[in-house]
Image 1: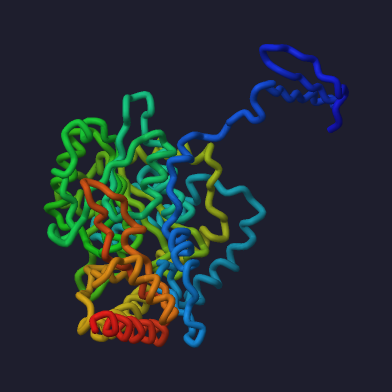
Image 2 (image 1 turned 135 degrees about the vertical axis):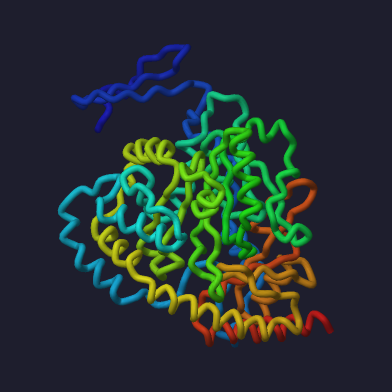
Length: 437
């Protein structure tokens, strides 16, 4: 497109007007006293750097020990092999690429998810048409959910999050025009949600609360008593509960983590009022690249969220839908996945226990460990001297109520293979022994 006239028409109020000799007729208006016109969403300025960006900056200040092979325990990316039958199902679904997928997915997909929920949690089978919605991984759904839920017409909307937390919760709150408030989860409270930390005026403005069970980073599973209190508060203040349960299938022994829908059924809340659960295949089935998950719960909320997503343009790839059905219908590979994690946890804990206060979590693939020195110093020096990457806990939290509850903790993701994970544990042990002497 070329300008029709280089000499602009001038107007002292609006500046210079340029016309282009294209039949589509486009205009550029510039103001004489301003070089640029700011058009970006101002809420973007509220976003902090992601934890892994902070870690890269921290590690950029030192040089890792090149004599040792690098081992990464800082990111929760599953490294176990993707089951072959899921790959085969993905290939078998490739013919579906010739069609546009619908936002709500196929009937077969929603039914597979509903049936899995019934089997897994011992609950009545959710209505596949009204209570289930497939999503492209829990991350994008957790973020977009706030955009659909928050009513910015009401004054000062609030979103409540655990602290430490998955940073998507905070970003979702800011971009929805809400203010995040934090409930510090600390060892003194067994990492429970202490609802008394926030005053009444915040709860009155709260429209959404994110909870994570099993928790990231501490691996704690919310008990029924805590769910009961949360449901009572939701009834009193009218907020929506977003339950992030993407670690629900990585647990130890026979006791399965309690889920939000299961808790609701046990407390006679079968309509799942103001409750939506988010789950994913990424950790359960070792397919993070598939970006496959679902939301389930309150039919009224699901209906509105589906409407939002229709405009959002996030329908699931048809081939992914085929592979997803296969994954939810099989439990053998999930049991094997748990066995691999259980073996790593048992051996790593036995190595670290003599030098660090470490214990097995309720569930998930993380260890949340108190450090003898500042968490950032511990992580940086461990990387420098032993080429092992762990995540400082302070990067996963915000200062709230006068403290950063992640300070002097590190998060270890036991996602690498057994030999690499044990080698990392041995290096951490040696490093910590040197610190203590």
